[in-house]
Image 1 (cartoon, rainbow, N blue to C red):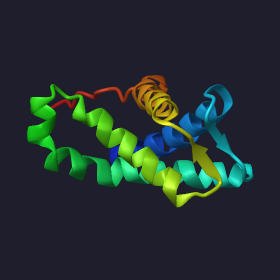
Image 2 (spheres, rainbow, N blue to C red):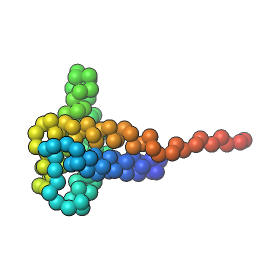
Image 3 (cartoon, rainbow, N blue to C red):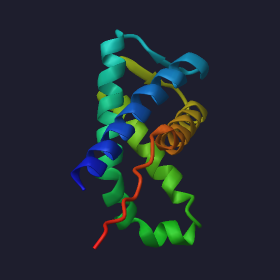
Image 4 (cartoon, one colour):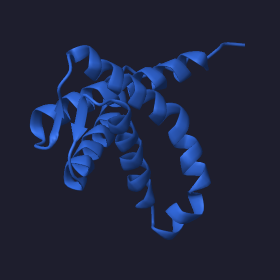
Length: 127
């Protein structure tokens, strides 16, 4: 149980770091002026926020997410990335389009990354 918890947490952190790096490389309007350590810290904070805060926000906004057929989840994801942008002055995401594409990259990475991990094989116990 704890191993699954840690695996999910580490995957969220890796998705945050890798997603911010990819956004800085490929999306105009997203740049980081600090060192790579700043990028790692921003990705770490984003991964922690996605792991701990996002489920609470999803639960609170469940009626609104149902009414919008899940599209409000995109607003929650964008708000979390915007909060990281505010926390780190070295990270600059200028405009809603750059914020949207950064969110899309991190969302896709958080879906794809678990696919690369090996599955735990089920064992059958003999009686």
